[in-house]
Image 1 (spheres, one colour):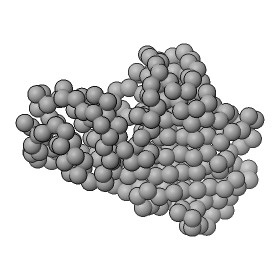
Image 2: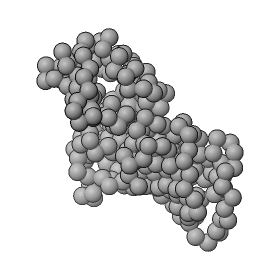
Image 3: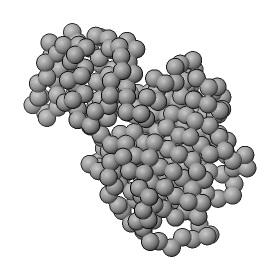
Image 4: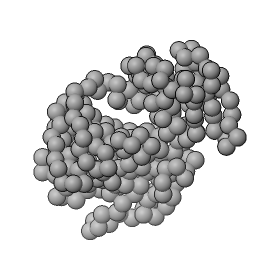
Length: 263
């Protein structure tokens, strides 16, 4: 199920479909038994022979933490989804991810950790990194915080990232690799967005994803640049109010149910 079709956080297990609270913490032990916010909520029988998969779906305006059976920690941003086994086999640790997800992979030299997406496969033994695969941004980004990862595009070309590097892919092909300040790309995990001269149009593209609302602005505003640090508010109106303190504009409701920013 796509994240844009949900209004609440959804956890789909082999036996049940659950609705979770925002900012939930889903946690698995080594045997694949699950807890949500420290409480066991599902009484299921776990097979020792076959891997059983679950998926966690996060809609607009929500964020969720997930601990996999190997101890790997993930944080899912708005409009994101991850498919994962409730426990891993002896050869590898493989998940599927889309949207924006920050991962801290538990070290395990015997079992590489592999992230699949529509644009790439990423292989790692133990590291911290952020992936962003939002279709609306037209570019997939992988930012390495520490460790090392190998990324393979859909054209089978490979790249190995070093800490503080960002890899960009377009339509599954690697197009750029450059040094960045990783704090700017993982600040959302702490509830902030860092702006360093971003165009308002770029900021709006992200806000549309985070809040699931169509936003447009006058051409006269689109190239206005934003600098600073803004808290990711739960309410879009509060977020827009804070941006108004930097770039003055008026907010109108559009006929289609979205928002228009005008001078």
